[in-house]
Amino acid sequence: MDNQYDIIVAGAGSAGICAAIQAAQLGVKTLLIEKNGICGGTSIAGGVNFPGLFHAHGKQVIAGIGWDITLKSVNEAKGKLPDFADTSLRHWKHQISIDLALFPSVAEEALLESGAEILYHCMPASVRKNGEDWEIQLACKEGLKSLRSKFIIDCSADANIAGLAGCPLEKDAILQPATLMFKFYGYDPEKLEYTELNKALDEAKKTGFITNAEVAGRSAESFLRTHASNCIHLEGIDGSTSEGRTIAELKGRAVMLKLFRFFRKFPGLEKLEIKDMAMECGIRETAKIIGDTRITVEDYSSGRVFEDSLCYSFYPIDLHKPDGSGIDIRPLAKDVVPTIPLGAMIPEGFDGILAAGRCLSGDKLAHSAFRVQSTCMASGQAAGAAAALAVTRNQKIREVPVSLIKDSLSKSGAIVP
Ligand SMILES: Cc1cc2nc3c(=O)[nH]c(=O)nc-3n(C[C@H](O)[C@H](O)[C@H](O)COP(=O)(O)OP(=O)(O)OC[C@H]3O[C@@H](n4cnc5c(N)ncnc54)[C@H](O)[C@@H]3O)c2cc1C
Image (cartoon, rainbow, N blue to C red):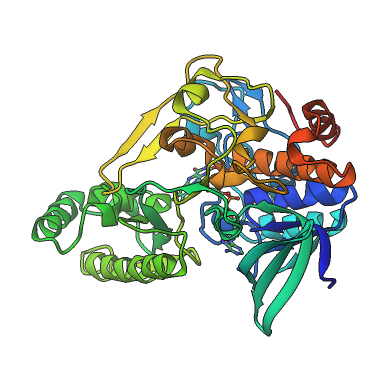
């Protein structure tokens, strides 16, 4: 690999994959760096393998690179798409189930075909300006590696790279819970004696042996009846630091083990098994950049179209209470389709750096909706196009005509407001 790039995209989740492919397709030399050994981020390593929503009110509003990869991986798996035309379904029924092995493999194939380079198992240790370029010190297995890049796109979800570069960030004092995804198998949910199980779990909650959050606020019946709903909520996790992540992973697996031992004692659950445990906890909320535009819940819920809106987003406001006691869920009104402006990707006072995906600029409630994977994919692709145009035209990001970014996105199959 080289040490000079036009664009370095940090974080290979929903946003980073699309940002890197889009930039590379536009002919700029692009490197995607990632701390894990696989792409997909929260969708894959976090086991949240059900991206949504690509459709609003029965009509597709997000397409392009993320949609193509999603569709291809579903077809490879001979999977089924939801009925997007059926608007009577609850929103989560329009999420798409993706295969944990096929999605990242198809995404890697698309990344390499686009000409983007990938470097796994590395994390930026410092980011600073050196003349016109960014200089990034990467912590690699073999030691520190120094790279230079004209432009950075932060798709780390935690705004880690923007933070290292000195960009202004915001992080709420009380964050939504982290979640460890796994599935309990080895029993027949139809044959369990739920009255007794519910009573036993209530008792364990009363004594404090198991907290409400640890079973995601559910009864034993709700927890055990559908395998897919076995997940643990963890309070007070700051997933933007290595220490916070370590606490999440250790706590998550300790709680899972505790629940496994607890439930295994009951009739019908003697052969309980754990399957599909995510490699890492899913994080809902940490730091976001403070952008030229900060998307508010009023902007989001009214479907405001900004002058520089580059993609759509569609999801109800979906704020998870930290103690797992429920979700503040507010569906969008009929015909409302929110949008994401370029201004929410540009860190205030900075040039040569954009953020996309979960660390876009917005208030807590708007963020609870725009953090979903389809929006991360769309904002990633938009950031990739905007950055590539800034590099090829040798312009500052705020000087690039929005119409050119939109044209470029449309040519790549994206839907632009
Ligand atoms: C429990 C849970 C349930 C959810 N449910 C849904 C749902 O039903 N539908 C939906 O669409 N969305 C859902 N979401 C939200 C969604 O999954 C995430 O917000 C989204 O995947 C974030 O995408 P991203 O690309 O911004 O970040 P991520 O997918 O998190 O990707 C970030 C990538 O950056 C890497 N990285 C991080 N820091 C660094 C660093 N310093 N250096 C190098 N690499 C780094 C990470 O390893 C990761 O690969 C859920 C989230 C959670 C936690």
